[in-house]
Length: 553
Image (cartoon, rainbow, N blue to C red):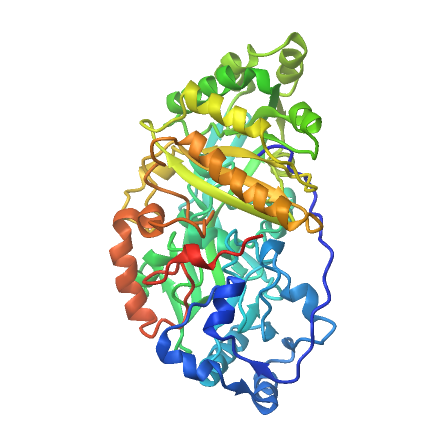
């Protein structure tokens, strides 16, 4: 999607009701609200039982001085209850524990099991596209766990120069708490040159990013975020705290490398191998009118194929629009490409030359001047953007050399884009394609839970609408997204989708997200969470159909 805002806008918080005694959600209520905790029939009787005030007091007393329990009616409850995607704002937790320590997480999980409530972690603002970081049970808010500790490696580090930048590979490790966001890591890059490949949205939690894979503008060079993980601390459903790494709990560690969050336990810290930078990188941001969509999309996809093995070149390609009226939607429609390059600027210009030759004289002049050298910290800021705000929905696809978009598909998508019904959300609608390859594709498919290792793009089709838009606008946007995706893939969608862009309407999500790795993930789930305490419609080992649990707007 294009026209993303570079600063996070917060939506208006709605007033939430208070209650002295929490009642666990009934199965009917869960289905109606789209809650992320489907419940088996054997648990339905317990769900009708109240959690007593004494139980809540016991939970509060068990927490560390730095932690807080919030209930409906507390002043701190509304902003913590509201997920980033307001589409799921109606799913309100019975209680929220703002955790400060691993022990707080353990106490909260043990308490939730004892009283029969589900427990769901939220590492940051609750960005999960399908609302899986929401619950009517106990929400574990991890945002207070912000500690960051970097440890340089004095030996065995190797350095290499890529044009104007020097990279010390494997320069050390950095351990981050479960509440750390992409934006929290930016000062390390800006002040010390310390870099871990993360995503582009500053407010997204590193926890959710790494557990589903983690794509960004340096993943071809240094691998996915999960490829840099060396250890993680996990609180299991039975209250045990384990350290998962290559030589400790290796099955669990394997599953954490792309198996998605809230499946095997609650993570309280992550240790990554980091790089150290000195010098500049190439940066570019190119844009065209939608009239150039066919040559731009064809040329950019060809460049991505030709540079699949060149880990220095990173590309994001998109088309999109925003507005309310038909005239605004047409005027704002466009196509863009942006990214960075670890190498000399003349090499980057040569790679981009076919794209720089497209468009009007004004577009060509503007795009040529948009290719320049910047510091890695400046590039991180220039490439950052929020995920869609307020209310949004998405569908994804993983494209390989056989499923790249041809002119007919691109033309059909452009036509559908101009038919977007519009909304009050300035994020608008469209598609984004993130190029893969390089170090990502040098990892065997079965080596980690992340299976998408021989592909060229992750595609996200998205639409958004405002909190104040009517239900009719919401319904029209969701209907448009379905038609837009069908226009992209009229015969059949690609086999795989990206687990960090979950689609609650996706039927064969097990194959789409995990492919050949799904059976092993189920075995890990049965080993570490045999009672299926951590559950949601698209959770590992789930027998529930996700499509029935998505709210209408």
